Image (cartoon, rainbow, N blue to C red; front, side):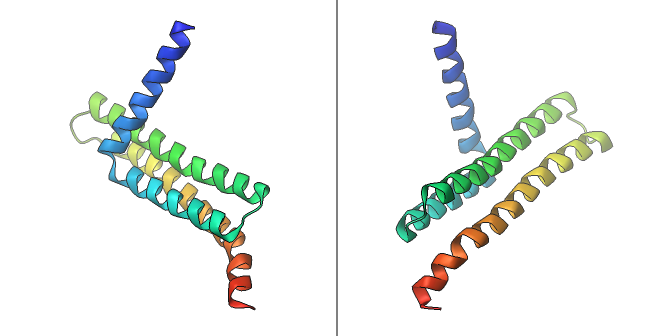
Length: 120
């Protein structure tokens, strides 16, 4: 049990370190907070909140993996290298695609509620 608790501590430490260091992660977390406050205010169903949770988690997970890849590549290859740059660019692309998917999902989820607010 001690090892399991320690592994959770390491995970929390890693997350906190990433939040302190990575501006984009802070942006994604802020957007996620706004999305959830708005969803709760609009009265999203449990299913809609579950979809929102999953898509937000996907973006955060991709950002964390991107951060880990960038750190590992920088450690392994401190000088500029074509393959190192490629690895970092592809990891960044994963974040970008997940963020685009989140925007599309948000539009699908929020538009009906916003239309109801405007009486359309």
